[in-house]
Length: 212
View (cartoon, helix red, strand yellow):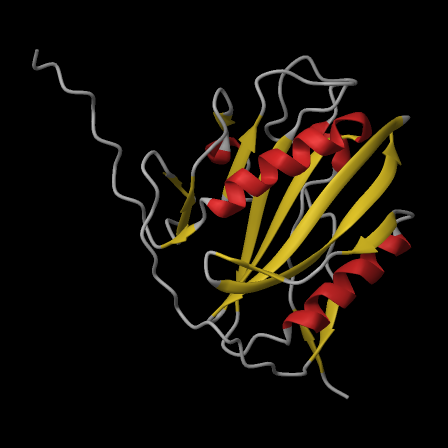
């Protein structure tokens, strides 16, 4: 059987830890998960969606989508070469910077969404993580599916949630990362970001008026 490779580079957990770092994560991004995907060709139910952005949304690095960042968070996308979006909290918690990152791949005929998720789960289990499948959902009107990950990295308990989204030829993977003790907060923050998701380049945020 022929095999189609879909390389989706994810930030390693070590890049998100405070331990050993005097600065927030920047150039530490490198390949973490590169699953092999069988060439089963799924037909996405959403194709090249374009939706209206919420006020204050910031664009992805390739301007293919936008989200509303949490208040006080920093958009460090320009410093993370392997991502199209990287938002992080201003301060670490339990030695982990809470952050939301997105990587993307484009394929003429993407594999089925379920296959993408299953291969991602296999890859994470092979790395020693505890993985729990999540309910399928919609993000920005496009079909999405994912899983929750619990692991220990550099002695710290870390939780991550990853969603795969298929929009036409785009395969997008979102990752929310936090310390295990902050799981509830991270889940709420992630939901707010995903709820604000829009496809297409958000318009620039208008400068506040100086007219009395």
